[in-house]
Every structure is written in structure tokens, then in C-alpha cells.
Amino acid sequence: MNRKQTITIALMCALAAILAALMLWRQPGAPASGEHAGHADSHGHDDRHQEAGPAPAAQDERAIAMSDVQIKTAGIAVDQARPALIQERLHLPAQVMVDAERSVALAAPAAGIVEAVRVSAGSAVSKGQALVLVRSPDVAQWRAELGSAQARLQLARSTHEREQSLWKQGISARQDADAAQAALREAEFAAQAARQRLRALGVAATGDGSGSVAIAAPFAGVVLDKPAVAGQSVDARTPLMILADLSRVWVEAALPADSLAQVAVGMPAKVSVSAQPAQLEGTVSFVGPVLGEATRMATARVTLPNPGLRLRPGMLASVDLLGQAANAPVTVASDAVQTIHEHPVVFVRTASGFRAQDVTLGRSDGKRTEIVQGLAAGTAYAAAGSFVLKADLGKADAEHED
Image 1 (cartoon, rainbow, N blue to C red):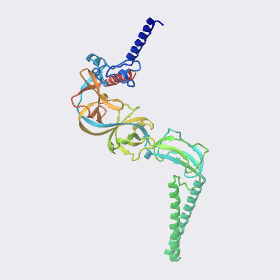
Image 2: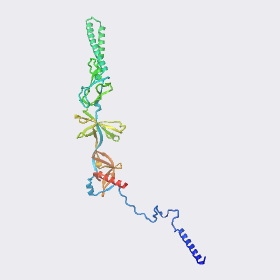
Image 3: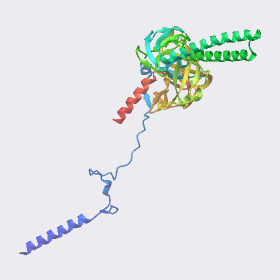
Image 4: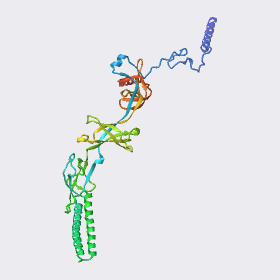
């Protein structure tokens, strides 16, 4: 190796040493090799020299921008919250029911066989009309016993009259007359007991020993059901016919537990039935003291007259219970109240449109609703067409989630 080659190799080694030193050299104030250098993200972008700019203004998610033309086109009416006289009203679902105090299940007085059924379900019957004919051996025996008691009574009367006559003539002793009088009283008691038993069971006291008995209507009414058929074997517990007087009916409404304190007997009520064009007026006649196990609701009952039998048991109805009228300082139209995320809101008018305002509700009569908190008197709000604003707000929420 000549001298020129040696110098070249030496220069190359020196250059390599300088390059290695440059690679290991670091600037003053730079982070150590194990630290997060330059805050580089997963894509290699270095944000060391990025400065935080001003945060964008937060958008009101409950506001809806609308021009006056759009408001008019959408049919939204604007009104102002104001005081009003509110007669609190409870609107309850209800049903027309049979007056249980005027209905009866007819049965035979004793075991026997149904001979004939003289009416059908839906028939209108009068008081005392024969409905079912039953032949019963027990009835035959009771009538025979009555016949025997009446025969003994007749004999006892004859004996008493004879003994009294003989005693007055001095022919017989006083004790014979007294014995005849005691026998007469005993016979009278026996005959009276036999008659009362038949009367209590609704059996005619014919006294002929016949076992045939007619089951008669205890009052005028309508036959609701007729399970009895000819030839059927029955006893005193077998229902033969269901009879009801429909000249008066019950309208029973489902009353939530949290509204019990607002309802009392005698409270005015208005009843609406789908088959009737006009509301019927009545009063609350009964408030159930027990809640239903399945519904957890009580029963509020309104008793109504039923001329012409226009109200039929089973008809669906609604009952409006009217409380005492009172002044409310801040009210809005009831249609203005909407529910968003399970909270009542009113859409308040703003410079750019409307905004959903949370409110606390008070009393309501169906037309006006009291605002206890969240709204001041004189505040402009969407009185009609607020459902359009609710729909727009729901659409905005859906787009935001997407």
C-alpha cells in the first residue's frame, strides 16, 4: 500500500467518525430518547408547535331556527302565557256496567228437572212473569205438608168451636175447651210455618201437593243470560237465568292511585259514550277503597238513568271529573305542551325561531294547563302546531346521532 492509499483510508475513517458523532448529537432542551418526542401521533404527525385556537361556539340543540314565513306556512300560532280560571278535569277511560244492585241470578228452590224455558236471552220481561218451569219432588212434599197442616187447622177449628159451645152449655168441662183451644193454636202455627217456607222460596202455596213450580221475575227487566235448558237436572245452586233492571246503569272509570285524593263522592261528572251524541251529566256515587291487583287502579262509579235502554252494558265510555275552579297565574294552551325525553316542554318564541323550554305542570281542564315553573306570564310561545316543532327537533336529534 502506497502513501496515497493510506491517506485516503484515513480520511474516510475520519469522515465516518464525524457522521457517527452527528447522529448521536442532540440539540439542547430536546427530550430524552425514551420520552414522547414531538407528541407525534400514530400517523407520525408532530403537534409540538400547534397552538390551541378558540373553541367553536356551542350550538343550542333545543333551538329551532324559523322565519316568520316558515312559521305561518307550518300553521304555528303564537300566543302569550297568561292567567286563567281552571276547573281541574280528570279524563278517565270507563265502561258501562250493569247495576249490580238491580240484577239477580234466578235458581230453582230445590233440586228438580227443568220442564220448560219460556223466554230467551235479551227478552224484556215484566214483574211476576213466569220464566222457567221446574218439577221438584221437594216442592211436592212441601206443598203436601202445607195441605196436611191446613186440614189439621180446619179440624182443630171445628173441634174448638164445638168444645166452646159445649162448655158454655155446661155439658163439657173447662179443661176440654182449653185443650181444644191449644190444639187450634198449634195447628195455626204449623200451617203458617208451611206457608212461609213456600213463600220464602218463591213457591206458590197451592196446597195440592204438585211438584211443578214456575220461577217468576222478581222485577221488570231484561234477560241477560239463559243457561237453563229443558230436561236439565238442577239444584238450588244452579243458575237458570240472569235478569237485570237496565233502567239505571253504572259507568265505572279506572282511577289512577295518584289521583285518588282529587276524587270524592258527589263530585260532578260528565260521561261520554261513543253511541251517544251528547255528554251525560251525573255525580260520583262510589270511589273504590281498594286498588286492583293487576291494574293498580281504583274504581270511580257514576250512576246514570237509562231511559229507552240506550246505554248497553259493555259500551266503552270516558268520564270527565270536574274539580273546584281556581285561578292560575300562568297558563298555556294544553295543546302547546309536548313531551321530550319524558319531560314536558313548551316551545318559547325567540328572535330566530323557537326553543324547547322545560316546564313543571300544574292543574289542567283540558283546554288550559297551569305552568308552575319554567315560564313567566307574558312569554310568547307556540300555542298551536307545536307538534311540528317537536317533530323538527326529533329529526335534528336523529341526524346528530348519525
